Image (cartoon, rainbow, N blue to C red; front, side, top):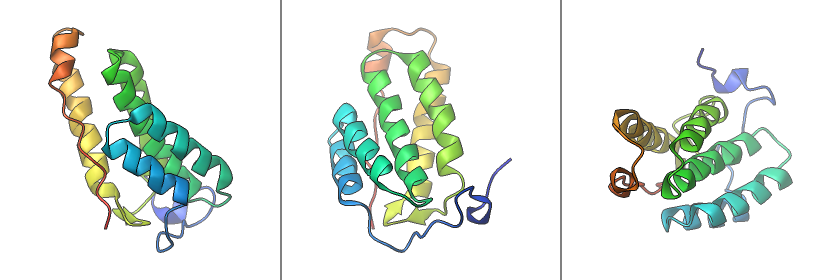
Length: 137
């Protein structure tokens, strides 16, 4: 079942505001493929945020952790993160707080599909996976 923003458990998230400064830093780190550091910054933003927008940060940080798992050769961990982040990101509109969320979702799902097509969990196969950046508007 796909949720809409109105179905969000914490109420309708305000997507017109600015990103939390640490979320912006986390996205910058994400775009440099420093996924562990991105996770740390986004997790702090998630913890500091009180409204429903915090789930946006949680979903993005889980994509970062999924990519980090791929960098470390942990395909099982990556798949787990991709499944978890769906529940956090799906309720949001395609653009929120300047994040092109529709593109982020499409990108991580393409990476997830690539994982599903891998015949083996070899490091060589993982080296060719491209991690697209998060696009900001």
